[in-house]
Amino acid sequence: MLIGVWLCQCFEIWGLKNKSILFFACMYDSLFNRVEDMSNLIFWFLVFFMGLCIGSFLNVCISRIPRELSIVRPGSRCPDCSTAIAFYDNIPVISWLLLKGRCRACGKTISLRYPLVELATGAMAVFVMLKYGISVSALIYFLLICALITISLIDLDHRIIPDSISLPGIAAGFLAAFLLPELSWLDSLIGILIGGGILYAVALGYYLFAGKEGMGGGDIKLLAMLGAFIGWKGVFFTIFAASLIGTAVGVAMMIASGKNLKFAVPFGPFLSAGAVIYLFFGQRIIQWYFYGPGPW
Ligand SMILES: [Zn+2]
Image (cartoon, rainbow, N blue to C red; front, top):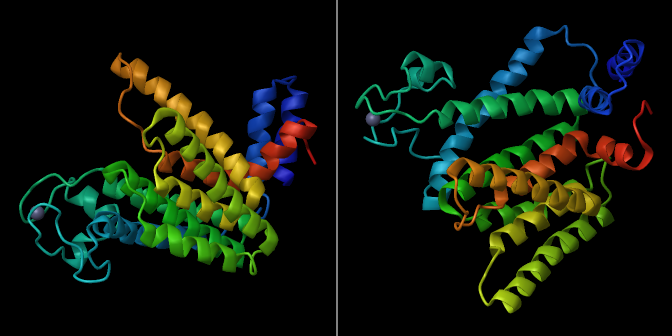
């Protein structure tokens, strides 16, 4: 909190009243509002490393859940030659770097995506802890983000959002509302109904109007799950943010490819991104929007 306020003051002293700079200062403040002391580096390294290991497990989930394989057995295997990966070759990120992104047995390239998923999960573990401290909220939101990383990449790969994550997720989010100080159970329940309802209405409208399906049922169940975890305000924020990011990415891809996008871009990753932005910055962005820049 103090760092953010201090940053805002510095910018004012320097005469930089540029709104966007103040905006970033306040977002910085929002991220670091629980934990000021970064001095315990070993603690943060452990949090990061734990996140890396969980990211490694998410990689397994991403490749196996769509094929309806067990995510526990057997252990990690090379996606190409199916040789079991030894524990010393399975250290997150480091093994990938040491093996220069290749399988030790067959020498085939192992996608850069594996270490990136691990790094992203590690970073999220740190960010969630910075934002929510050592708390039940931090644990619940980290599990939610892990589910969203898994869902997003499965959606990118296969254009499906597995019911085996989103449906239990709806129930888990509703139960989590009883543990989260940020969310009442009524908020969560309305979130489920609005999240499920809005997209269902849009999908139904599109179907009646265009005569074909525009949005998958998977997106509807995902938004209901998000509503369960972040409440109805979070749902509105998520739809708004996802549409903005989705439009920006869509336009960028059209410009980059130089032609009209005829294929559908999966919406799951954008909904996930919107929800994660809400977890970290939602309150601040809403305050910013309605009451102007802080400090509050
Ligand atoms: Zn191999």
